[in-house]
Image (cartoon, rainbow, N blue to C red):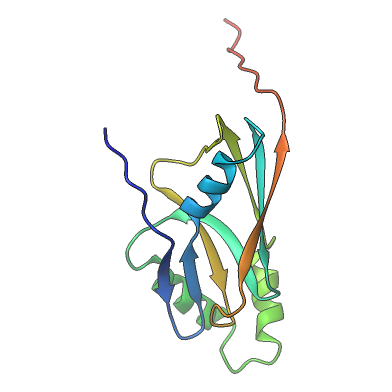
Length: 138
């Protein structure tokens, strides 16, 4: 099997939501780290941004934006605060081994921004640990 690296990409640019696929950037940061395995803590830089792990399907971001618009209309005062409450934690935790993210086959890491993507970024904090494998008892 041959693998290729997809460059940093804009996954969706919608009226109130920008989505960036940062999977490869996170993977590159892990590959150059000193930790072999552990937990990657991914957090956004920016008050109106979130990091999420999800499958990259066509139409998912338009559906997501439509859902958020139904739950919290765009003209709602304090919309960003209400969206933050709905979306839960702003970051994600992803395990890694051999300096590689352990994502599902179609999963990607996304940076979602409600401020048009301006001045948005992300942070990676890796927590190392020894990997142990266990088998179920018969």
